[in-house]
Each structure stands twice: as structure tokens, then as C-alpha cells.
Image (cartoon, rainbow, N blue to C red; front, side, top):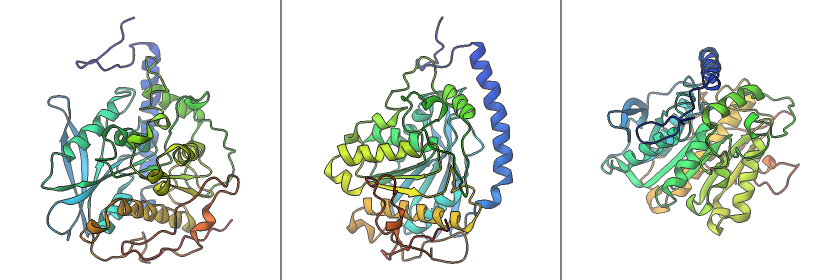
Length: 386
């Protein structure tokens, strides 16, 4: 059977009943996702007036095609080239509806660091399987590096949620640490080569949790099959990003995952891999934030004050990581003094010390140092009612 390819020899799904079955299932899940996004929209704060959001089109490597992106720009940002963070949204590699769910995160990063944030879209499977989403992410970064009058190209970072975390790591690896100074992965699928990877079963016991979702094995298997064609090796480092060469990743890496998330062990293993095999500077700056009693995408639909506090803490940790990846000399011109925004009017996050975040089941997991606000002030961790 001839494997279908496009005009630049990229592999697509074969035209079989399996492919059409995937199309039917994925489009059904897309309809459900639109309803979920609509029904939970009130749980995601709106962007405030101090940051404007502009829709742009970024040129693709494919002639005549463009990639949609939203640019978050602080209204009173100082003139001149500014740092930029490129965020990749979650999707299961398939769902368009989740694009925009990271708006509060993007706002917090842009407002607190007085930098640009580019929230990039990408093509979805099964119509556009691996590696087309990665190519779109690469094209956005390539475009960023042509905009030297707008962006400070010495201070570029990436973040990603769920599937977007996978894509952010793969893209960061492609460009290397000289270009991408920091990367944060929120609860991403990181290893597709294990025996149960295709169904998202990592052995996590499904216990009680406050917010987020527990991914169904069947739904996960559909998304996996849609993204990874039969011609692909699931162990390809661009899919199983845990296999990426560590020398191509930056020093500043943050993994965030809720311990009720079925993908939690993958973030743990990648963090431990960096701490064991990474260079000294990576081991010094790599961090893991273990969020107790939270499931997948807990930050996008927090259903109680504790979840809101942990969402804000995770965002503050990411801001702290990005800032620390910039030199101290550059930091003084990056932001004006301000406090970390929360979704409510309260400017602070109350609670216990961050040392309480360590996982008691595995003491090799260390957590972020005490988080700091945009001016270096200590931010206490939220209290958790067990």
C-alpha cells in the first residue's frame, strides 16, 4: 500500500477504514470539547485591561499558508525590543476548542514580566498527524527570530500545556539552549514508547482530586492513534520527548503536574532523568512542582479556592523560572515593579512553605525553591485542606 505524503514528503495516515474511524471519533470528541470549554469558561479569568491581545498570522514553511497566533502585549511596556515567551496550548494533539484556555496564564506572564507572549495555534491530528504540529511550532519560533526590532532575541522562552508541553520540549530541543533560555511543561505526555503509553495508563491510582479531569483510556488511545501514524516510531524523540538529548535543552526547565493526573509519573521520570544525567547547570536550575490532589488541566477549570491557589502558584513558579533564565543585568529593564496578579483582587497567595510540596512517596523528587514575585519578594505557597 502506498503511504500518502504531501508535497514535501511528510507522512499522513493511510486512506483506510481505520483513518475514517479516527476522523469520526475525533470530531465527536471535538464537539464535546466545545461544550466543555463553553460550560467552564467562567472558571478561567478574562484578560485585564493592562494587556492587549492581538490576533496575527505567522507565515508557514508551506507557501501561502499561515499559522494563527495571539500576541499578548502589556499596554505600558517600555519601548524597544522586549523578551518573548511562546506558549503552546493543550489539545490532545487533536482538539481545536482548547486553544485560548491558557489566556490567564499568558496574561500573568505578559503583565508580570512586561514581555510579549505569543499563544500559538498548530495543526491537529488526524488530518495533520506527527510531525506537522511540531513544524508549525518551529515556524513560529523561526518567525520570532526574524523580528529583531520587536523582540529581545537573547531572552526567548517556551511554555506548553499537556500536548503543548510535549511540543514545547520538542521545539526547544530543535533550536537548542542558545536560542530558547527556558521551557516549562505542564502535565505533558512525555514518553510514547512504554507498553501502556498508547492508552495513557501509567499506573496512577485514580483517587479523589479537587479539579481537572482524569483522562479516559479509550479517549487517550484515539488521540494517540490520531497523532502517531502506523508508519511512525513512538520512540522517536520528537514524540517521546523524554528521549531528547539533554544537551539540546536549556538549563532552566520546569515540570508541573498534579499527582492525581495519569501523566504525573512521566513528568517525574523526566525530571529525575535531568537530575541524574543532565549537566551541572541543568541540575542546578531544573525544577519539579508536584501539585497534590489535582488532576489533568487543573489550572484551566479550578473548582475550589485551593485549586485556584495552586494554579496561581504554578504560574508564579513559571514566571520565576523564566525571569531567572534572564541575566541579572537584563532583568532590571525587563519589568516595572508590580505584584503577581491573582484572579481575584487579592495580590498575594497565602499558605504554607513550599517545602511541603515534596512527594513523600519518593524523596528523590525535589520541588521549586520558595517562589518569588516580580520584584524578588517571597511568595508563600497556598494552604491545602487534605
